[in-house]
Image (cartoon, rainbow, N blue to C red; front, side, top):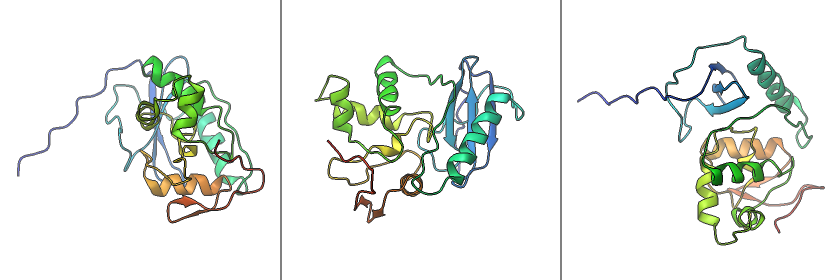
Length: 192
């Protein structure tokens, strides 16, 4: 059997990278001079960047801050907000950037649909394009793409894997059964 070709290293403006552990598996972090540019699950992540051309920097102050804020997120009682306060620098098209900014407005414990985001962006017909941009989010958990569900509260895909989406939504106080949110938690926003 021939060897599978390996992806060449990604040439970017990343200035450092590291791996950290999380309850959902190993995570790859990447940064630029401006801020955190990537947080990907090292296994099972669609669009995982592969090998990055950036030095390993386990003791980078930003990476330490990310790790501490993620630990606070996981340690919080279910449904309790644990927001992130980090400089972010995700790389993408202008449209992707707009979608990712919209994701940042979805509060802890809230959900919205792809159509809701398309409306916020002033283009209610852009559901499919919004879905593609959500799927390309390079900052899992921090930019909360896991909070986007189908209009009927059915859980749609998640580039980090459906089991991770369910774990994140459950951590934020949602009840999930058969890939659907079943009962709003007190204080939880409903779909528009």
